[in-house]
Image (tube, rainbow, N blue to C red; front, side):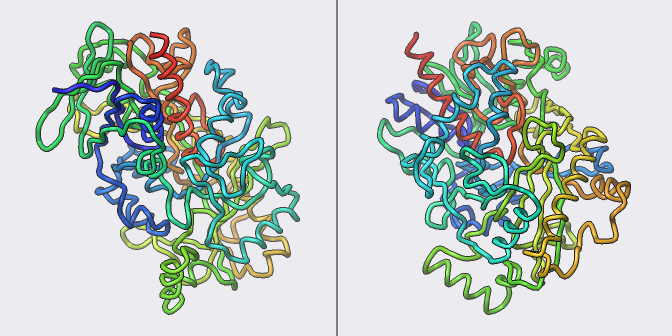
Length: 535
């Protein structure tokens, strides 16, 4: 049994940022991570993402409960099982969300998390290839770059989007967060830049944190209403670590509520059902689960795409190109261009993300993704503000049991209608001359599906989770019965315990959530330091 100033549980997107900033401030920090290192080729080379997602060596591969809104389908929800967490295995699209999203957080009780308050942290965490301005930063730990897998058909899709009436944004992460632009990616020189890479491997001073890998938290150690340390499992042995100032949970939206409940913090009745002594009754732990949902429009084209570049001699050339210049197909992110749009004029912010990729997948007999053999493109229609709120709960008191994930991806008929509206927008773009001359056929949903009822049925059958779970340890006011942490990320009613990860988001921001999760870790460190200095 040893001690440290502060313990961070979870070395993912937010946990790496939290650890790096606390260590930079001079604290003795111990980071425990249940997975292993991210320093391997499969994480570093962007196009190898498919080799680590749903690979239990790198991914928790959580099985959700059957979803009645998707015909009873039970999806696998990925979660990073290594340093860097989601940032070490995600699709690398770097997007912050809309100003409205953060102002809405503040309206819901997350004081100090409005857009003007979070913007300085987005700027300080970035090293942006486009340079610094009022909205963007340089010199930070997270490299934000232009995509290096460029195809003329992507340029043509952007031109078509403009012809369809979508304004061109010079920077969707900047002043104009609506419209169409190229995707920026979390990469440096064609290699993935995970949060672990930016905040831990390339630290900028301070005291080096102690990093314990393959170390799984069993429970928090709480004495007299204060978190004083942890009990964890490593090398087949149960161990205890004490902390002078407290513990930060950064285990992610599925694991953070599970670990809180295993430690006696959560809905009292649920804890008693599993024989867990109640330390603090917080009904909101595990509640408020949200995720983006979407479906694809897939087209066969007569232009060069990543599908054709992955075949034969072209594929060999792409390997050589990556080795020599860190460019080409092996640098690809999950999307190449995107548009944030409103399908209804009276909405306060975009409700749809239309993401274009110069490639498309099929499924093999085992249901695994595989690149199509012929030149194809895909357009993902993502719903940004779905209506349903799901729940994470315990399966048992066994600390090695995975969480129980109950969620309806399609929470209402209106959710379905909005995605159908998005399919109409995607098709309108693809019908514009700038790209339409290259379209050979629509593979999914299929050109014959035009009736609204047919499209609604397609959405129910073909929609997928976008793997952006948030909200299960909601930030809010103390008088909010669903709030788990206050605006300083401190767990309500427990001293010396903070949560800093995507679970604290009151609502989903528009677009991919990884940049926001990293920002929470970066900004959250200042909240922890403020509390420690006050004491």
